Length: 267
Image (cartoon, rainbow, N blue to C red; front, side, top):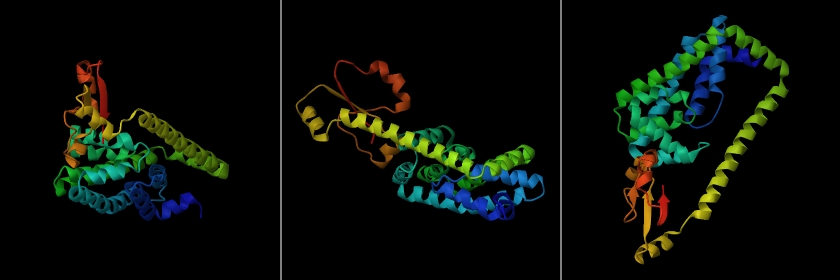
């Protein structure tokens, strides 16, 4: 039995498993599987509504668990989750900005945006969104996401069938190319992050050295770039520091003097 036939026969088991893997931060190909199920449904070999319903039944308890962890343990859960992403330095800020702008309605599109599937539920808990309200938007978001991709697969079933046949003809060669592309992407992300952190280490100042400057009365401007969630998690500040979110930096750029030492921190 080939992969497509297996997916058609066991879609109500395979698809929820792939979605749960994404919910816990494991990047598995849920979207291609949804497209394939939609294409199979167009040929009468699978049931798209049944597959979507199975995804909802499994995804809701998992995201409710993340919600409760966020509600009970606070911003530390979000920070730990973001460390699992490819861009942990921007994960918290990007997710928080999205939630502050749209509230729990962001759950409707979070599964379409890489990296947000896992972090949005605990963020809803951190902001104490009502459980029933969260569950409603969670279900609507899952139905919208899964329904969109299966519907797309249904509409373009002929094209997907052609692609699947050609991919099957290429066999291991295609798998090798895809695997190498993914590895190259991950290596590039890792190298860029390490270079960025190396530049930060070169320019950093130790806490004791900064305290010595402050005690000596040196003219030092300290900017606190932490996100609102970071401030909630650790409501402490270096004496004399000015709190400016990175999104508001452009508004304050003209007010930052260029004739004194500048120290910034974000965690």
